[in-house]
Length: 208
Image (cartoon, rainbow, N blue to C red; front, side, top):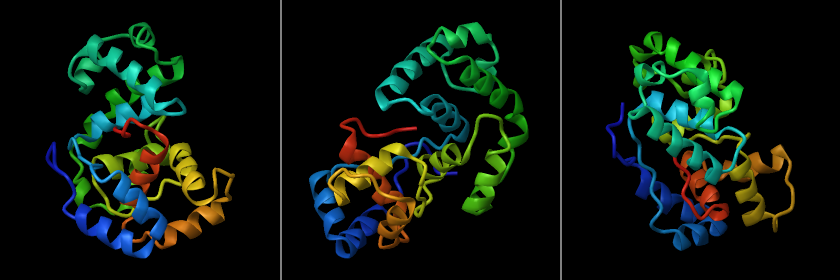
């Protein structure tokens, strides 16, 4: 597991190769040259933060997250299970998200001992989506923000889609086929390209 505060070893190489293969992305990388991806090294933390961020804006998610941290302190299964569903709701979580957060916390003991580093991206996604409230998108956020896997392309992420549409199609809607087509030239560094796509549409860097 990457240590907290660790940045991917591939980051600079990826930026260089992406700049060569994609002129549009090259300009975006130059514009946001200080952008970095840093892992907290804590799957559970990122999982809970991702669930909270589902289908709401970065700003709204940040507000809910701040309230949650204030309410329970360190984000651990034990601390979350000390509060009830109403206390979670008071932080701004919907009923369903509060249920998900409690369910994930209850189930986490069987996940905590897994050797995630030896698992392929697909295996990690398959394991995580067994948790109620965790879909493919949430599992992909784990791959990007905790595991620092280099070639993740979260096709269901609205922010990333908007970034691509803004950067490559004057903001006009694009089909999944068109999005995948653009991502082809980003391989094997689609994670890095995705981070820059997010940055083009949100002044606050995405974090999980």
